[in-house]
Amino acid sequence: MFQKELVTGLYNPFPTYFFTGSVRPVYPLSPKRTVPKSIRHPDWAVTGIPKGERRLSRTKIDLLDAKGQEAMRKVCRLAREVLDITAAELRPGITTDYLDEVCHKACVERNSYPSPLNYNHFPKSLCTSPNEVVCHGIPDQRVLLDGDILNLDISLYHGGYHADLNETYYVGDRAKADPDSVRVVETTRECLDKAIELVKPGTPIREFGKVIEKHAKSRNCSVITTWGGHGINTEFHPPPWIPHYGKNKAVGVCKPGMTFTIEPILTLGKPREVYWPDDWTNVTVDGKRTAQFGAYKKDFASTHNANTRIEHTLLVTETAVEVLTARHENSPGGPIPIPTTMHGTTNEEKANGASNA
Image 1 (cartoon, rainbow, N blue to C red):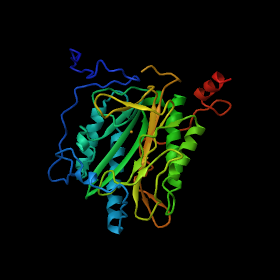
Image 2: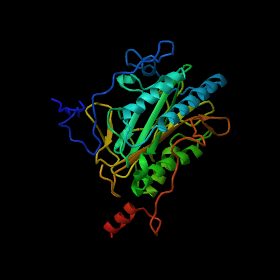
Image 3: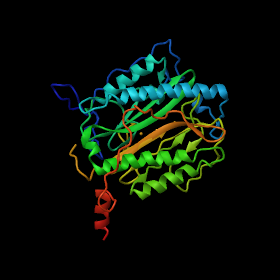
Image 4: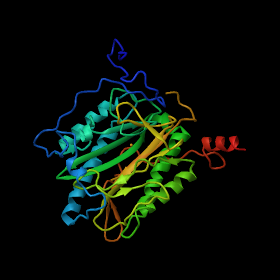
């Protein structure tokens, strides 16, 4: 059924599937990694079922007291350390499975459980989403190429609380030299920053999506609406749901003690997705690249398809917001200038303008 490469034993597990872009799964997956019993496990560690999360009211939002807020600060500090350690290993020629190994080891060294591991039966300790993969990519034997962009989505469980953050990184110098990849990555980063600026007591949750979509459209990017931010505390994905698009109907306002993520995903193409047969890997329907940044998902040319994702975990304070997973001065990655033409537009924007003339 599978066509294995005789020398390496590597293979594509879905040879008859119509892939929308250039990324392919490369199996076999490495054996499931283990976490010492001495480390506190979430309720899905054995069964794969997040029982506590499924019992939650979808409208009741927990407000953390001082003790809970301090616990969130600690777990988020650890999560930032793990992301930075993992991202520091990012370079052309390594596999995403290797990054999973690095992440898993860093979590265990911090007496923490990697929250994705066996969550609804997810097989790995972090999500790795290259190029057209929107989110929830499974680390495997695919070798990263100079010119890829890659989202690392890391979550961990420590002291009874979860942290969640992700960033999209450039793999090698070719990615940084491509105007379209840079545009979608940096626009997504800016969308997250603009949304965070609004976070304070009394801000309606629906407002974040308005500013995200407005800025995305100003750069000819589309917001993928399927995925959103979420609450996070003693549960991995409690209320509230945080839409990232305008004209949403999210209810509720920010209140002191709330902890939640904002994690917009943008694409240069159509804001629609499909799943690979693994039922986890979510990709753009047209194969165009995406990028995500969150706070709590080949032949290189200027017509690259892209999407981006970034995420932070946030705490609403009495007067404003505390970004619990904020970057450090020496954190890997970080913003770079968006290449522009003489008229301040990217190559793709210029091409679109010419085609519409």
